[in-house]
Amino acid sequence: MTETVSRAKIMEAIRGSGGNISLIAERAGCSRDTLYRRIKKYEGIRQAFQDECDRVLDVAESVITRNIELAREKQDKGEIADTSDAKWWLSKKRLGYTDKVEISGGIELLVPEDKVEEWVGILTRSIGRTYSEDKSGK
Image (cartoon, rainbow, N blue to C red; front, top):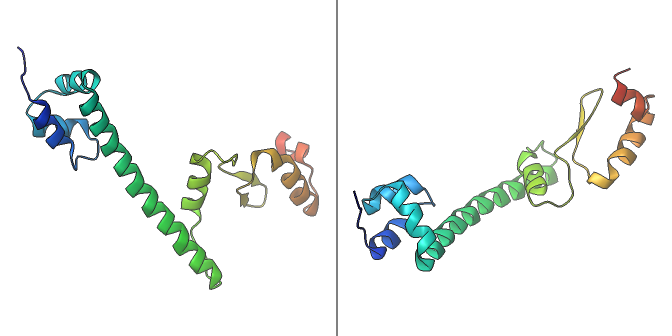
C-alpha cells in the first residue's frame, strides 16, 4: 500500500508538534515510516522538522534558565534553593563538570572534573580521612 501525502501537509503537521513523530504522522495522515522516509528524502521537510525540534529545546532551556535564576534569587535572600537545574545545565552543556562528588557525611558538590581529587582531598582532610581511604571504603 502506497501512502500519498503532500509535502505541504507534512510541513503544516510539523508546526507546533514539538518534533513528535507520531503526532506529525497522525496530523499528516500517514504512517510513521512514510514520515521518516519523507524527512530523509526532502531537505525542506528535514529542515522544518529540525527547526521544530530546536524550537522545543530552546523553550526547555528557557524554563531551566529561569529556574536557575529563581534559585539564585532565593540564595541571594539567604533561602535554601534547589540546585538540580543548575547541576543538570552544567553537566549537559559539557562544561567539564561532574554530576556529583559524594563524601562520607552526606556532602555533595558539583565540581570541575579536573579538580575532583583536589577538592575531595581538601574536604576529607578536614574530617580526618584521605581520598584513598574514602575510595576503598575503609
